[in-house]
Length: 80
Image (cartoon, rainbow, N blue to C red):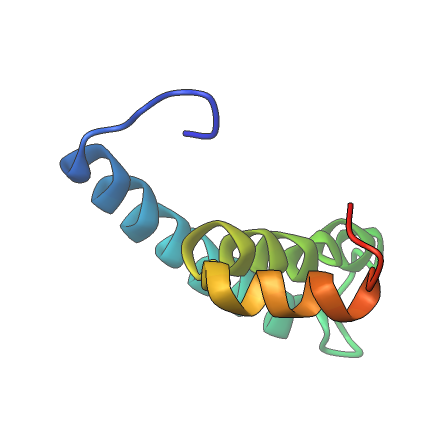
């Protein structure tokens, strides 16, 4: 998805698949968080869920160009 130019259908399939993957991961996390759950090592693996959510946000909810330019100008007042 990052290097290719996906069709709108491929992009929507990816978005929907990712949405369901996150939902299922949250469900598994809630079960694994139970104090009586036998395999605590699973929690460490599920910690990457936050990383996946952040990646989804960056990929599908991009910052508008004007906002990015404003932040860049404030951070680097002398230009690039």
